[in-house]
Length: 302
Image (cartoon, rainbow, N blue to C red; front, side, top):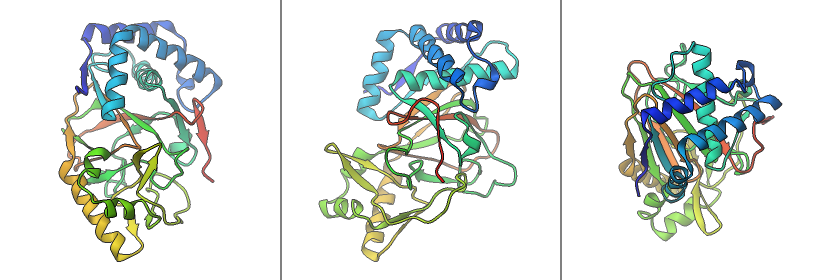
């Protein structure tokens, strides 16, 4: 099934105009979360819904359910000739509006980016050599929050491309494709508490972690939790299987080549993502989604 959906530039501009002219939100409501934010961005989600139309949104929902990811092209391009702050607010409304229209609430963590709901994903000066969203070196395949319990782990990630002059693509691989290449015994090992998942540098939390699985069967379907660069097996057998798992994931991954205005959303329980080295300018904007968290909740991991 198709996973790339193109919005006409006229529709995209109309959605931007409706959000901007509504004056239903202000800059301070974007980050951090406030009661006004919830109301404002719920209304913004309605504007995205009415702009795209019920039939188009139903196609997105079916594709996301079947493929665990989708791309909406042009929804964030050709923004009005607005001031930077106004452009930022419209972008945030698009991100949150699309996430909510697919059935997920947006939320954040106190220990990541000071509790912000919307994150700017771009290299940070002084952190270029970190294997994280703040660095420029290759960022291996991973699921966000692999060390967290399922109910608080991001269920979806929504990413909006602001600038990809660097032409650095995002790599994705689906769990279904990986599972097909594993034996029953290998799946069994990956489903046992034999792997240490370490938090990334972007989370300011205690690094201690108990062994947990990589694969978990939920309601008859497998989910995954792993950052291939931040995971360590506790024994040699588990390590051999983990290396095979990582090799298969890399071999089967495919690339999304970003265009300005692309919005990518994927199921963080069902896919891994990563990217190559960044050489040049690359700026994405991100929000987390979950059907388990209240809208605009900021979790304290301490």
